Image (cartoon, one colour):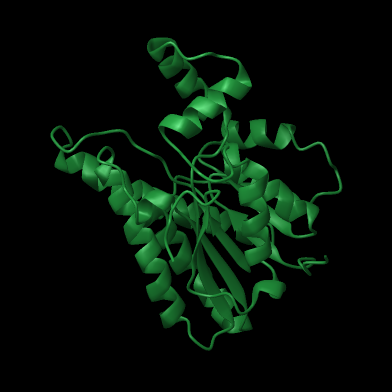
Length: 266
């Protein structure tokens, strides 16, 4: 399927690592020009060094999007490359740890800045161009915990829920502009970080540590779902890239879960 992404420019926040990096690579493989965002030049250089396909159009942009000045810096670098954003992927976020009885006000504010305001800053910078050309795509990465939170990390789930809520508000604000706004909410994704964290837990619990039984244990104890496994980064990226395309033009204001059917919600 041709997704018609040639000639489109996508900005992917936090694309120097993890799922964001896979999203950026998949967009580039589909023909988009991709601005790969990192917080530091070192992160950007390391990410770019792994991009083996010279035919991909990927340019690094650097800035601390946790500040207004850093978000402005990202946009200035895009302008230096002669690029304007058609597709904004707000991938960056962090599952900050904490519990109700120990979280400080500052930690709640930090979670909101990391998981909501970092996206808001980029949205405010990118929507004027999208409005002017009467076309655009905004995809915000959330979590299934935005509407089915756990007891732990309430500041994280609260901030992600706010992002999902804001996405629907933005879709209404941008009515009749040709811009769609959607949220993608994965469950647990099989990443090196998740595997490492569960290996530590498995040792404490006495679980088997081979890869198959470890994933089975994760599914059994923390993430039961009909598919019986975790998502891959590529599965999340494929949905994000489709939603970024002209072919997804009538999908708008949605929060789409990639969770293997874990959440029983109609």
